[in-house]
Length: 142
Image (cartoon, rainbow, N blue to C red; front, top):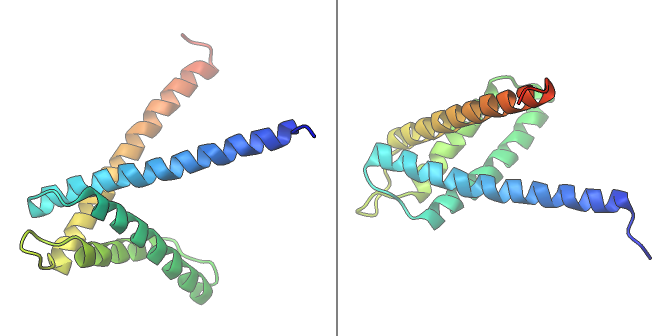
């Protein structure tokens, strides 16, 4: 039994998706560590930051399902606000200050805001670079 070329392409696509998800989690945890360092003043544990990213993803997914049921698929800016508030709550709950206490919801909101701004700016820069590279390749300019 041979493998069809469609199955091989599907497997390569699934592998690429897995690499992108894992890479996104690892890079997101690094950005969260940087944002926490900028706001609070010290670097949290990298494994704890990975836990925050994963728990935020699960909590936002659950909140999005509930929101989708309540608003019948509509949204706009509301999912971003829910992502921000849930992320800040998870940061406040899991990333503790140096003495072991919670940093407070206000600082957690600031950490989440810095995290989202860093991510937005980096995605924008990567998008511009990719657009330039593919634009030049598409028009045949070397």
